[in-house]
Length: 278
Image (cartoon, rainbow, N blue to C red; front, side, top):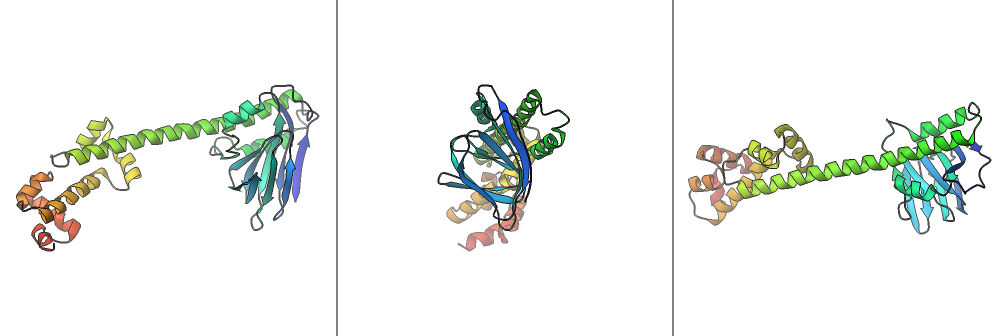
């Protein structure tokens, strides 16, 4: 097991906004564990590779590369490296009067002691700690420098949370557009609507609408509209005595030949043959 750690002289001071206690890196042996134990400060681990488990109370969390876990003061915790693929992680320990506020901004809470860091291409947390270890002597490990680096580390976690919220908002907005378009198609399939009509109705560029619709539904808007029309057409064929032309018009087809061709493509049978199967 390889460990590289730096401990400051500030590990008994808490009457400041934020102060770093220690930071380090560890390549763990299989099944290496720590605890059950209690800390008197905040401690964030970030997994660089491998996997392991983190236990807090009755909850057990499985962590892999790119995930963080938080140990808060006065909590009994236990963590253990995987036997087959033990983790390699970095950590940073700190405290202060603003510590709780800042870890909350990062996305941690009493019920959420783990999170996934998704901004590794922008700023890797592991590289940040490793650079601290490499440069600790160059900066004489001054308190001001260390505190500044701690703020940078936490700010990346805050940015990570905001990025996740923005993505969620964009996904939610896209879902609303898709739902609105589906409802429009279901309400108007009997008319000669086009996909451009649908895009115009929800106020989106056709190409963008196509992209978000297919991503969400799994088929193109055109194919989905055809599916709606075919479902209704099969229902009318089997439950009414309407003529084929009437059913075609009722499902948005002005060309009976195109209607028959589409029915056969989806059922393998002509409209007349499909009607006789029931």
